[in-house]
Length: 179
Image (tube, rainbow, N blue to C red; front, side, top):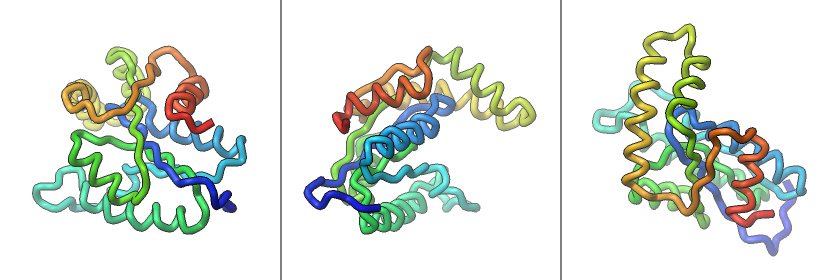
């Protein structure tokens, strides 16, 4: 990566409930940035928390994710990334602050919204051979959507119910003002 040294690094976290398309949209945003010759990196927070067992009191291994995010983002920034696109879930203002601190740069947060029946259809396709995972994700989708509604940690929202991933990514880029 070769960044324009005058370009101030920034991060965007794509937030939303399970099945809303956070990872797909983050990858598409990264592709748009690459197409515009903007040095970038895409980070999926789920992969940074993926270890077992999670410590007692840290159900989703948030602490591990923060430690890994600090290291990974630092590596990308040192390599010249000017934009970090992060896919994950931030459930409250304290989590947002902790992620921003781990990233070490300005953070904007976009909430993807999708109608719950559409999310349920997506989850049924994704977990069609995993009945236990499907039950958990179906229950979690509505629960997490409610948590995110109450938390109001997002700077802007993009509806992803009927638009293609590319269209949603374009809307996200426009709203954050990166291109």
